[in-house]
Length: 89
Image (cartoon, rainbow, N blue to C red):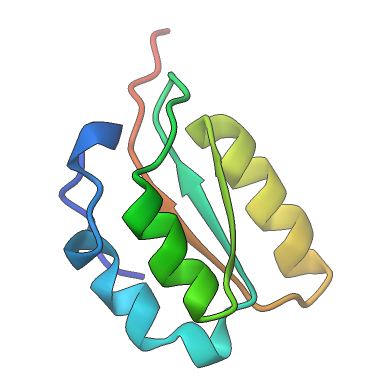
C-alpha cells in the first residue's frame, strides 16, 4: 500500500501509475477508483496497461473498493489505485 497524491481523475498519468506498471507481472486486474464521478481514462494509460496484460476497470471509488474486496477474497491478483472521497455524516 502506498499513498497516492491524485485527487482528480484528470491527474492520472502513466507516471502516477508507475508503481503498478512496475509490478504488472503480479497484477491481473487494476481497479481505478475515480472519486465520485466517472470519466474516461486517457488512451495512452489504457494502452500502457493493456500492453502489460493488465485488465483495467475505472469506476467510482466506492465501486472500486467493493470490487477489490470481492476479487481479493477470490485470491485474484488485483491492485487498486483509489482517489479518496470524503464522506459526509
